[in-house]
Amino acid sequence: MAGTKTRVDLDGNTIKPITICMIGAGGFIGSHLCEKLMSETPHTVLAVDVYNDKIKHLLEPDSLPWAGRIQFHRLNIKNDSRLEGLIKCSDLTINLAAICTPADYNTRPLDTIYSNFIDALPVVKYCSENNKRLIHFSTCEVYGKTIGSYLPKDSPLRQDPAYYILKEDTSPCIFGSVEKQRWSYACAKQLIERLIYAEGAENGLEFTIVRPFNWIGPRMDFIPGIDGPSEGVPRVLACFSNNLLRREPLKLVDGGESQRTFIYIKDAIEAVLLMIENPARASGHIFNVGNPNNEVTVRQLAEMMTQVYSKVSGEDAIETPTVDVSSKEFYGEGYDDSDKRIPDMTIINKQLGWNPKTSLWDLLESTLTYQHRTYAEAIKQTIAKPSAN
Ligand SMILES: NC(=O)c1ccc[n+]([C@@H]2O[C@H](COP(=O)([O-])OP(=O)(O)OC[C@H]3O[C@@H](n4cnc5c(N)ncnc54)[C@H](O)[C@@H]3O)[C@@H](O)[C@H]2O)c1
Ligand SMILES: O=c1ccn([C@@H]2O[C@H](COP(=O)(O)OP(=O)(O)O[C@H]3OC[C@](O)(CO)[C@H]3O)[C@@H](O)[C@H]2O)c(=O)[nH]1
Image 1 (cartoon, rainbow, N blue to C red):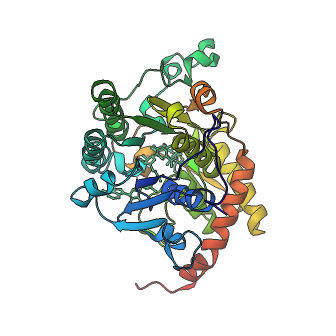
Image 2: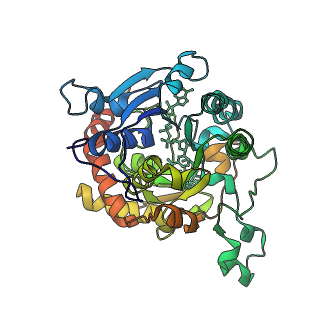
């Protein structure tokens, strides 16, 4: 059971129980991290969020084995004076809070910039002033587009990894023009990274920055009309899951040519736990956390999800499984895209000896099994219900 046997870090030292102030604990990543910390470690979590639906199973009932090691604090970090107190009484702060769905970047750029930069400022300040360690969640989007994307389509250099592999310490950050408001998020994340780095350099802040590369799994985002707004546009996993559950074609934005590497949330959480429990190895570093072996185009992702969903649901795929849609139609004015995202793993390998394990097929199988079990019945009922109009 968690907390009863001695746990050691990568250098063989005993790990002491700590208190973690986790901001954004009620979201997708936060819920998995809380689950891991409760079931496998003796640490205490002060879980801060405006919502707690995704961690309710960890908070209730009081008889859970970890009762007393997790407390939920419903607060909005934009305007709540309790934040400093929570950071002060913790050993480590993990900041996950953000607006991080691409459909918002070009349609709500002010909220996006405030959420990812302005609202994170007090968190960094309180950590720095109170000598508290900070693990801040940034994004792979800070790399923007690859250098290779600016080469002619037929250039052989496009095949050279030097032109597309994304490295924390050497790759540039290449964003589109200011009118392309898609980059409001990446730019805000980049500036907060620079501020944290500067706090480390000038004031000795002990920090780690995480750049997640498309972490996916159960509880990611919402299914429109079921546990989120009917007109809402979540990230691609939930968009495609929604289409499959409703037996609608999956929408391929601009032909589905963009490439992504997807990593299973449970693999990624292992990396975060290593950062939490190995401060001497993690502090002062920026880490890519992704699975370079799981690269697909968005079109290939749609095809694979269609096959996997057929297998787990027992339903045949629909006759026309995908449909092309322009980015302007799907996301509106100001959308732009990252062409390709393959993480370099040198730094995380060297510092933490971590590697992802789960193949794309396997992670889709467990995730779509969860989506089917969780939503298929509710979707059937909404489809069967006669509409109000
Ligand atoms: N999931 C990924 O693949 C991925 C990729 C790149 C970066 N990230 C980063 O990781 C972090 C977590 O992402 P996620 O996928 O879990 O997103 P998420 O939207 O599921 O979680 C974010 C949580 O933060 C909370 N939050 C936002 N603003 C808040 C505020 N003002 N006060 C209190 N709580 C607030 C939200 O309610 C939500 O529960 C984000 O910073 C995101 O930019 C995630
Ligand atoms: O129905 C859809 C939805 C999306 N697409 C395309 O899929 C690609 C991936 O989209 P998505 O997962 O929504 O987001 P991104 O990978 O572009 O950005 C995220 O990456 C990390 C993070 O920082 C946080 O999660 C976020 O910014 C993309 O090409 C879409 O256009 C589709 O074709 N159909």
